[in-house]
Every structure is written in C-alpha cells, then in structure tokens.
Image (tube, rainbow, N blue to C red; front, side):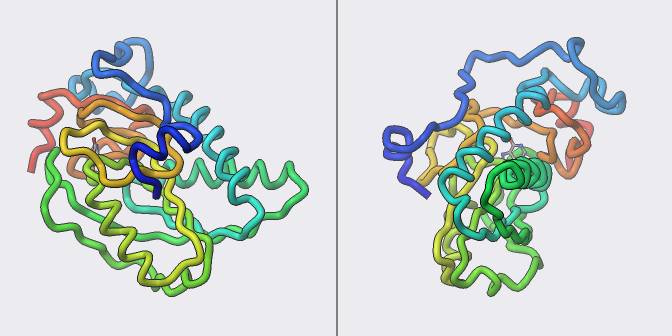
Length: 226
Ligand code: HPA
Ligand code: MG
C-alpha cells in the first residue's frame, strides 16, 4: 500500500476518476434484472467498462510482479467478481508471454456494512488458514476502499503471517470526507461518495446479481432495509 498522495504522483495511475457531478447512464440504455426495476437510480459504470479497466490493471500487475509466483487473496464477498475477472486476465497474459506464473487463490471474508453504513466492528469471518501467505508475494483483491479502515485492519492481519510482499488491487476507491490512510497500489476507478451496488457489491446482500455498477435508489434502500 502506498501513501495516498505519493501513490498518485509517483505511482502508475490513481484509476479512472469519476467526478462528483457524473449522474451515470440512464437505465433505459442497458439491460438489468427486472426484479430491480425501480430500485436503481442509474448505471454508474457499465460492465464492459469494468472489464476493460480490469484487463489493463492485470497488465500493470503482470509488469510489476509477473516474474514472481503470487498468492491472490480475494476479499469476500464483494471482491469475488473483480477477483475472478482479474485472475482470468492475468492468466491470459501469462499464457501469451514466455513466463509461466504460478498463482494460488485464497479467500478471506470480511463484513463491516449494515444498510449503507459502515459499522465500527470489522469481522474477519472464517476463511482459510492464512499461514500459506508466509514468505509469499501476496496480492490482496478488494472491490471497494472508502475510509481505508477495513483495508488497514486487513493489512495488519495479513502482515502477521509475514508475507514477502503485499500489493493491493482495489476496483473502486471512494472519495470520502475523512479520507483514506492508504490507497491500493492498483485502482480501477476513483468514485464520489455515493453508495453503489452490483458486480458483487451488495446492499444487505442484494444486488450482487447485477452486472453493472449502479447507484441504488431511495426505493431500493427502503425495500431491502434490515
Ligand atoms: N457499496 C457496497 N458496499 C460498500 C460500499 C458501496 O458503496 N462502500 C463500502 N462497502
Ligand atoms: Mg457489503
């Protein structure tokens, strides 16, 4: 993880920046599951754009650490789509190059959100024995980073297993008021402080079955509130 400012100046790129006034695309321009009709405001990032950006992140990652075997640590549940697609792109690049990359994929499950708010206590649920990370090059793959608190807790946890190197790939980084302490090394998109769903990101476990990243509507929030 790089320091916020430094990674923007010295790093590769801070991701595609989506400005505060971006309203998203009209829902009428795309398809999405009928059961979410009325529960969404707009298509914020279409699925195809997510895929194209992920392909480029895979290239950046390969250029940096493609010479080493890596352990991919997928942060569930929200990270499963991004992680699966990222791993596929990395595999394709590895096939088409003359280096063969050994990749392991492991999982860790975190939970900190209720409705659209972060709760104070972060739970690291179940998952595998992370002693497999000791001495390895670890790529943590996370769907969204906002306050950075979750990421800091996770990094501290992973560090206790003494990996050789830790890099973080985050599909989304949210611009929040009390900003992040640290940013992912690889960022897909920097987005405004809005609650988004889809592409495995949930609102109380709903909307993971939506391909695009969308903004949830007030009706959607009411309907799936707990
Ligand atoms: N959507 C879904 N899950 C999240 C978000 C979000 O905007 N921010 C943090 N967890
Ligand atoms: Mg969630």
